[in-house]
Length: 246
Image 1 (cartoon, rainbow, N blue to C red):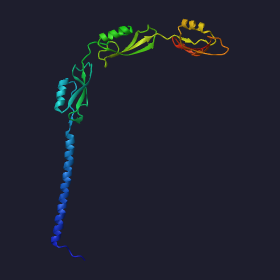
Image 2 (image 1 turned 60 degrees about the vertical axis):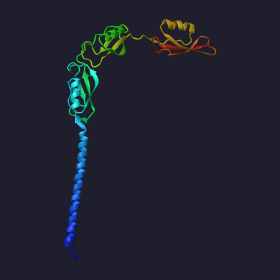
Image 3 (image 1 turned 135 degrees about the vertical axis):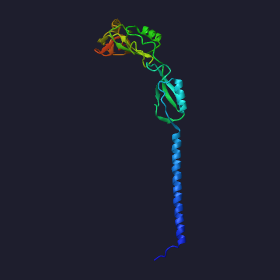
Image 4 (image 1 turned 45 degrees about the horizontal axis):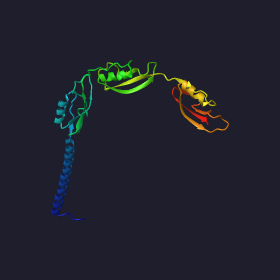
């Protein structure tokens, strides 16, 4: 049976154990302190966004400056409720955390629009353009639609007349276009070109390409092929291509 260790040696082992335990505790505390300091440093670069809604732009700029943030006006728009020069919306919203020295994007109100949207329906496109300019707006997209009204007459608009706070400065216009006259493509093959051309001109039909090719046993000037083919729906002023014997 092994003899017991001397008391002096036991004390040395006990002292060494206490030292290693204390060293481990100190290392753990140091690592934890470093981690907490790092998290605090990261969080320290973030600030809470204050609300600047309905505040005048300069006042909103000062409020954000106190929080270490800037202000950027991205859009201006008319608004019936928010006075001119005040903030309509903000991004990010109030209460959100964001990094310091960043800019909060806002939309600034132009106040209530003084000029309502003019009535354009029933006027010509040219007159509508002039009215749009006189009322301080811009002409947006112009679309055409077959309608039983004089060609070029405005039949609809957006925004509608008397709209006091449209989201855009542009007014889109829908213009009437006369119904297109349609024909059925006549049979031209076998006829003389000198008779075909006056016939098509009388009907308001447009001749496109005329190609001449040599054919045996076919008289010179005779229409050999046509496009579109006979019976095909044909709109007014659509080109008709012919192939003629030479």
